Length: 215
Ligand SMILES: Cc1cc2nc3c(=O)[nH]c(=O)nc-3n(C[C@H](O)[C@H](O)[C@H](O)COP(=O)(O)O)c2cc1C
Image 1 (cartoon, rainbow, N blue to C red):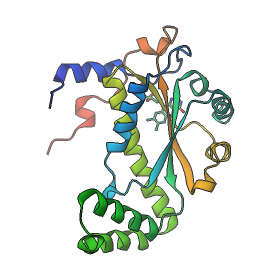
Image 2 (tube, helix red, strand yellow):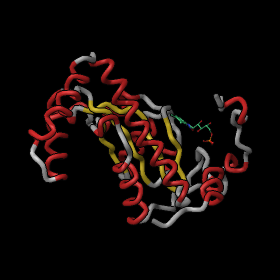
Image 3 (cartoon, rainbow, N blue to C red):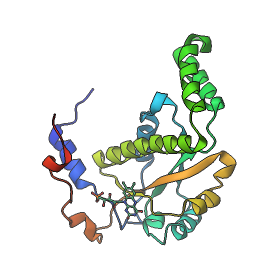
């Protein structure tokens, strides 16, 4: 595996910022889109269940509607693509069974061989209320969101992670209920405009001493 140099990584993490003004003339190439999709696909999740799906919106009319549901934030229309992370709404044993089949097919084994693991997963799912599962599923989606963000930064692709939108409106616009999904968080992805003053601001973060506790 080719190693990315430590200083390159640090530079990329400092280079990235929550982009407020995107250059609407710049679009992700097919290769860049595939890279970001792969990053999301390879993100880890609890047990590997991936209790979410990601809608990727590039249609200008839909983006316009999403902008209205996101308090007019221009990233929704001006970014190249909007990744909408949506958690599985009703999460049941059926989803565990689907995952078990995927494991068995991918690894060339029988579902019966992983019965113990499947039972543990079902035990977890059945011991939680739908509210607890909603919270759990949303947390898994945030991990994939983070992987997307850092992958984008390493490849000089800009992004703005956003919770500032009306989830119910998004769900309606995107028809998420029919897919048993609920929107959680979004990433507007594309390329910064040189007009965006935010890119010149120093990063405000907790100091090393305030953030890390070595014991
Ligand atoms: C979960 C989450 C939700 C956010 N929601 C919004 C948003 O709705 N609109 C926005 O402009 N920025 C949003 N941000 C960006 C944050 O304000 C920004 O990441 C933070 O101030 C740190 O700045 P930096 O990312 O430029 O380093 C969000 C960030 C995160 C992680």
